[in-house]
Amino acid sequence: MNQRVLVMNGQRLLQSERDGKWETTKVDKANQLKPGIYRLDAAQPADKNKVHLGPIVHADSVAVYQQAGQSLLRHEAAAFDCLPQTGAAAQIAYQQGKAHCEQAVRHTRRNIKL
Image 1: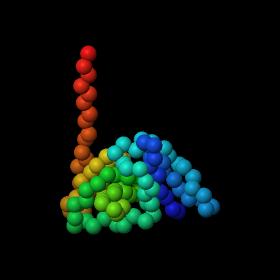
Image 2: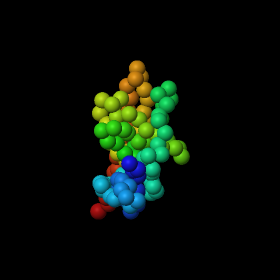
Image 3: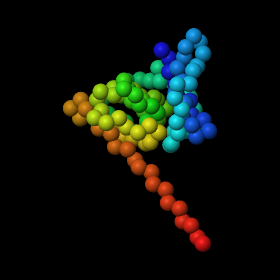
Image 4: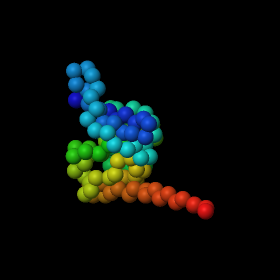
């Protein structure tokens, strides 16, 4: 089954192709993801000997998809103790077959003058 993530207008839509048509199965906030179409079925397996940097595009019970440069990588979900947050930047490295994920937490502050 073909799947893609469509990011537009601050929303992240998970879509599946059925009978030649794309059906939206989930909608949530895009967070830090840039607008575009991310083809999950075209993702390449992640190299476990490298450290991967980039935002998490999608995570489910089977795989975690991460954008790294112009590529989309697929990490096995079973390698994670806890799935990373979708839409946030992450650094994923493997140690002894387990994936370790560090996510950047983005804090915003507002200065309000009265």
